[in-house]
Length: 112
Image (cartoon, rainbow, N blue to C red; front, side, top):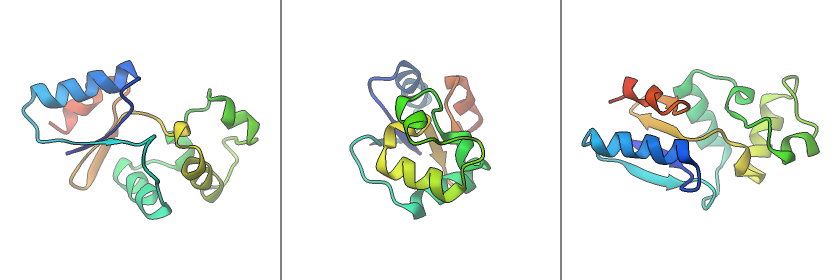
């Protein structure tokens, strides 16, 4: 399993704890410290079964500063997440060809 994790986020810490308590081997990816690319983000969207706007944090200041909206294209949102990874909803937990957003953290139980 892999978790796209922000250690400063309580929901992300709770999701990581659930994975650890389940005894899952987990790769922790602190997504604010890595560089995403389009391939990874499109793969995440496919595994989540979601559109780009559904995995973006709309309350972040940069969201409004970039004039993003539900009408923004997939390409615009992906480019924004690449440049400003803080926009990515967290945590995202991936297992094989499936992924869930761990908000609430109990969502990840579907992967355990």
